[in-house]
Picture 1: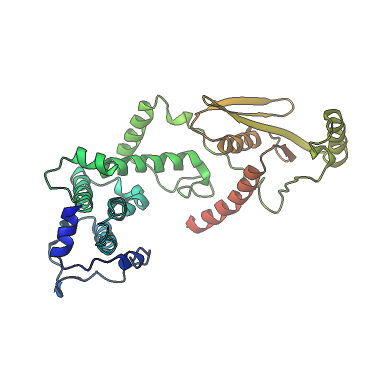
Picture 2 (picture 1 turned 45 degrees about the vertical axis):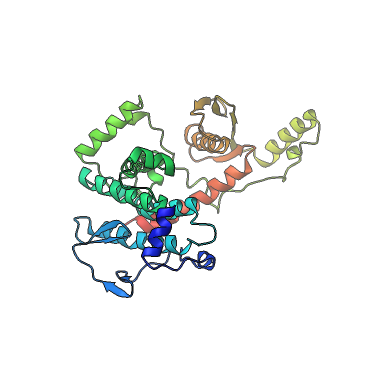
Length: 349
């Protein structure tokens, strides 16, 4: 950190406690290429420029990505300079977070694109990240990257980009027709080329699974549409848990015979322990029960149980009565149907 303070002094930077309150961390887009100056003299853009020990290249085959990469870290680096103050010394954690997030944020949001970078460009990304972290931590240039990343508690950027890209694509495949990559007609907008198909198949093989084993979310938007879906919290007598069990059973039978005689009834539930997460659904005459990965929450299990029950157990062209104890999941799924419809409308040609 002493090295950072020396650099700030060398670059004639004002260091004061007040400046940490005015650090510009807004998300406003830069309207033009940022002007860089040193000691009042502007620096023109050339083929490359070294600023705060970070080299920014002007030309690159991924021009749009590099342009944003060049602009965003500059704003974060300016914030890095302004939060340093003299009385207590620069705050290491803030410097690391601001610098690293400035470099990484672009890749997080464009991971579906940047995973196509060549190994050469991946190495450039890693170089930018490690140089930025050395600036933030005030460590010498000869510090090994493994030591640097461990001190900063960060993951090497190229591997993070690849991992996030795989995570993004796998999630879209699992979302099925609800993904913006698919049209309303369930025909995919984007076809995988042979190389990507082989890479994805290899990934699934490493996970001991196949493409056919991915359970996609069913299309139940019509069932959950706000105009035809009603949620009852305390509309009927049997929903009062304070009553004796025998009374609840009697009231339930009466309600079904009077209010939902022509409805197809489905009941779902889910549970979670330290080792298992389970979901189940039942109707007349079929039922199902499965265990899913324990990393999934009880909320996820409840939602999957409802989705699968509607898709597997329901009878076409019949009214449905879904019995579940998770109001939050029902509300979320109801809202999801509206949001997905709007998203499809905006992505469809």
